[in-house]
Image (cartoon, rainbow, N blue to C red; front, side):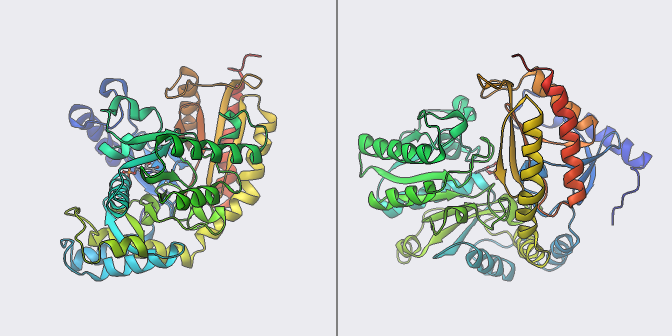
Length: 455
Ligand code: PLP
């Protein structure tokens, strides 16, 4: 196994070669190719990665908020190796034990009657298929989704996305209508309390449904807790309100749990924070197997599954339910249960991240707000607390944010950053000591952020 030992000269040389080849031949996502200096990762273990200079960094990003069990978990590595020795690939139309067991486990963990699982390769295609299922089930076409949301980079998923990544990809796909989900700190509804924000956001959604045609919508696609858009934990009653509205108008409720699911929020699925809320479709990916092998999927209600009992579902993917990915999922869920990782995320949220970040917010004028739950937190940085002017414009980076990201890395912390936010999203099994170390580094870096504040 890999150890704490320093990276060897040979590994560093291989890393330098990889970097050169990368810059010559690899096309990076969401990037201007000549303007990036991507970090080389030589190896990783648990909550740490080693970069191309041999520096050891505490991974407070979980990569793209997917490595929920940390890097190189030995039980999952062994399960992938064992499966590779037995059966590396099998087409979706065949039965395979890893896939059957993964489906059983997901249906057991998801709420209510979401008992049939369609596997995909990742999150975006899970969203694509959930929308397709909702359209075929309802016979309707339009889809509602929130501004300040991310649902994936493929054609439909990016179109229902509500953050600026949609804009350069918007070819006018008909039928997507956006609405404002609750976000008290930057309230679109001039609300001053969570309760006001909740009821006004629900009124707003209902008004859009009415204006666009109450029987026009196939689905509402909603992140149970919007993730990349800023970890806006919805106010109490909001998810239940959306459930009630969608039911009233015959609209399918698609809860996108690609980022928030599989323990990230301190519960297996973030929709559980909303009480007894059961969506019609639930999309997942990332944490299902911590991204060790690409996997995503849709958990389908009995009613929607019944639509396709005697009518073919027109869709599928060569790698749907890939055996290596499913074996990794079975081992991941097993390890998460045996090692109490979801409980650990909840406990850390309540005892370390919540209070620790609140302290940082009180101390640093550059912090506009901290919010989150479990191992899922955002630090919203501002240039001015009164005006709430963000540290970077919405949809962009800024020199200030770039300085802060570099400062984190120089101090041994790998952050997840988006626009004006630093996210605290470590593996769910991060130790208390690692969690505190990360917050101490953040404290130091926020000292630099404070120098960018103009009163
Ligand atoms: N949905 C949500 C909520 C996400 O956060 C993401 C990715 O970050 C996606 C969908 C897309 O997932 P993928 O990148 O696996 O296609």
